[in-house]
Image (tube, rainbow, N blue to C red; front, side, top):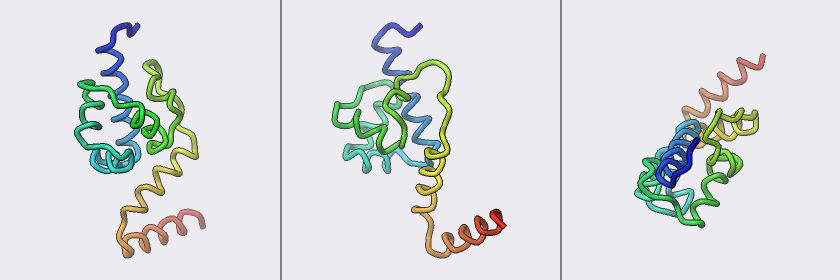
Length: 112
């Protein structure tokens, strides 16, 4: 059972990193989305620091998860189809126009 502040910060940070990497986001990109510095995200993920309330409430929005997922220190909650959709859209938004065209053809072929 996690009962001290240091352990909570460490587990919280591990969860932020887990959901960030599942979406393919860098620390810098997540920081930009949360309107904070990459040092804030790095400090949070390592358990060195805890985010401000402003960042705390932006994190789940930008990671497309409920806030409680960041405080779940037991089993990993099930990732829903909607959350997977956000991850796919995030990947697609980073592609060049040529890569998007290829991705579209691949997705179309999968659906046929």
